Length: 421
Image 1 (tube, rainbow, N blue to C red):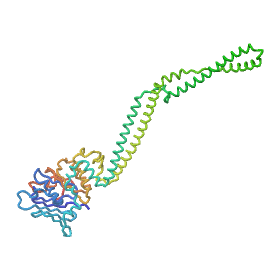
Image 2: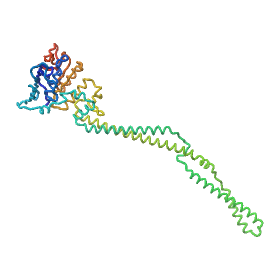
Image 3: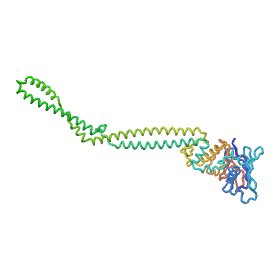
Image 4: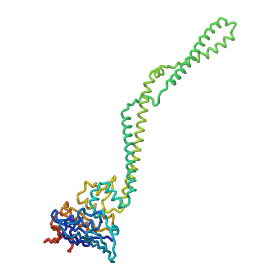
């Protein structure tokens, strides 16, 4: 069960002469008054009485007082806490009349509840760490944040390389007339040599034809003697003539041109191959970029699910890139009222046993915001004792020259005002 302040009596502490307050159980109890009247001294006294010597004012004794400081706070769990005497000794009595000490108070009193500015004045990452400490997901969220950063950086690098490849491919010219593969000079020379060899064979056959014709002429002179040989020769001659008619020499002009143009052709082929390679690599990097985008979204989704599944102290709270956010806005973009609301919610979550928070300088809130804040506190069953430079109807009590007096406006007070004391 949450512990709250049911009453407090203060004398001769800092600017306070004599103050008595019965705070409302939930909602706002506003300590009003003009400047330098002792409003903040009320909060300082509560911090000292409940929080211990770490909050002891440097000059606790009211200037001009002949009696020592005295403070008494009664808590809703039945404990009575006193500081009195020359040394302002601490006295804690439980409902059974047994004495206790500061260690017992520390169990259910949040240090941030006493000293909210310590939380409010921390940087955004410190606030985020406090929230993650509260909901118990700090280590896992840090791991996901690091994984998200790593994937994002990898994806960005891949995207940059892919863009460079694509730009390089676009800048390269295209030679449609060039073959798809590089030309080998030795292969062209080999083809040329084969054609020349076949042409040589043809020439041999032509020479053979001439020889046969000469031989035939000789045989004509010897026809009587060589009838049989002439018949054989004629037969061979006929065959040779038939073969010669089917012979056609091949041209090496195109190969000779290719050989002379080989460097230019190969240059074009290389450019085409480079363009094709660059386009392929650009497509591969684009595909990798898309794959990393999927992984990045999975990590972000896991991170979102982790926070959604946590018992956050206030709807709309989150941690983005290690910084506290509320309703999508970072701390420095929140209104003063929203900052206070967030701070109170987180501080309360830090120690659920502590049902109260001290706030100073609520004059930054206008009346509408103040009423809204008070209604939210009531809804959350949270007690806030706050100061405000004002003597208006919103104040529960007024501090004037170190004394407390009830504020009795003619109109009815808001539903969250403190009760009588």
